Amino acid sequence: MSAEENKALVRRFYEQFDEGNLDVAVKILDTNCVFHFPGGVNVIGPEGYKKYVATFRTAFTDLKHIIKDMIAEGNKMVARFEFPGTHNVEFMGIAPTGKQIMFPGIGIYHIDNGKFVEAWIEYDALGLLQQLGAVPPLGEDS
Image 1 (cartoon, rainbow, N blue to C red):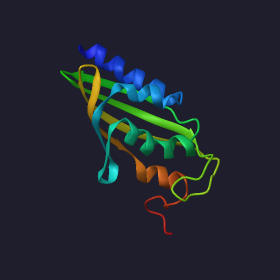
Image 2: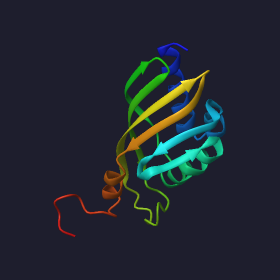
Image 3: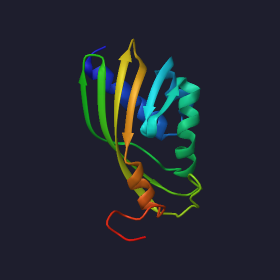
């Protein structure tokens, strides 16, 4: 696939995720696709991915990707994005705050034959927890 085709594939994946169509989004994943998430969490396959992101999709019902940059070379595609949403449902034991949150992230996707075979996702988990009031901002006493 060309660099532009790989970018289009990632855009389509994000669009389906953002619309809550996870069953459609995961059709882009290879059966044995491995997602590497922060904290050393490795998620395997479409069902594992859906289970992992369900926590986010439930807690932040309007969560979506705002793509800031995309770079493609060979069979790798990198996307830098922002993730805004509203905290409407409990998240990791944190009661709903109704707060608008936004955290940045970067995804690196290894694509083969039109499918994701591996992905490395980094996002600002600490910043998210700070926005929800679960962790004090750096430099502030608790």
